[in-house]
Image (tube, rainbow, N blue to C red; front, side, top):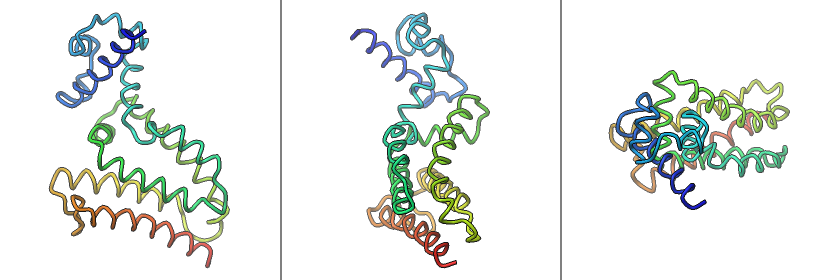
Length: 205
């Protein structure tokens, strides 16, 4: 059992190493087995196929997958009274995780620049999870003229772009320095403020 788990670990890590050095399109069974230093037959034995192995790597590094169980449990407890707080904490958690995790940053870049069916499937899983919580806000925003799905989309897209841009081109974006504690705090607080503004605007409509 220990050898099995060690081999699975080597294979998952090999996928990450290949993605980092040669890109997502370079993933092949032979290359992964060679990188891991194991027989390619073990990929089929432990994962069934290359897609399942790649998915195992993604599940370990994508925010929505890593925290899927906690988020699903949290979403099940969402009500009119706490939906704003849950959404705010989810967005703030995404921002902090995404900033610190180069592997997820790379996955989002792959998703944006490639045409992988697997990455589209992962995207659909994220969308499904987001839909679960956004549906809980429908009554709050009904007839308010505010499309909160669009608000959430802009915030999530802003998180991805701001982090990816600053890490590639320097840490300042719109004069916010993400390398500083003050800059990170400013973005986190602003996420909360935008959500708060949307909820208050709907309530006052």
